[in-house]
Image 1 (cartoon, rainbow, N blue to C red):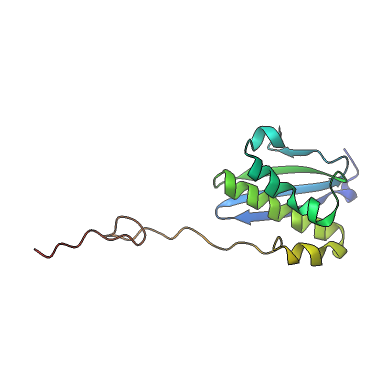
Image 2 (image 1 turned 90 degrees about the vertical axis):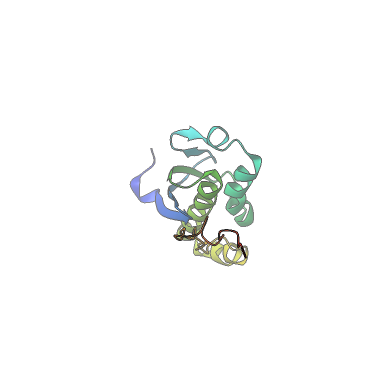
Length: 132
């Protein structure tokens, strides 16, 4: 394990998913909840979303990622991890901020699920209208 001062902690969020990310200099291995990236996220689109901050900043293979992810679904977890990695990269080097900001990776997607209302089937869907 590298020295404590080289580890960068950050948090990423999306819907109800929270990703606690540790970024440290290394060879580019990504470990999520003690599992590999391919094992935890079998979908290519999820893996692509997670690796996007490294491609934008051209730092692929320079950092190892250790992450704990909880809550939400798989897509929300992948986006939370992407947000956490982006914030950690900015903490590592402030020069990466403009490119990440331009690609929308530092903005937290604040959309949440709307609650169900009484008398409705879902949040907004109402019972069918009957004239007679």
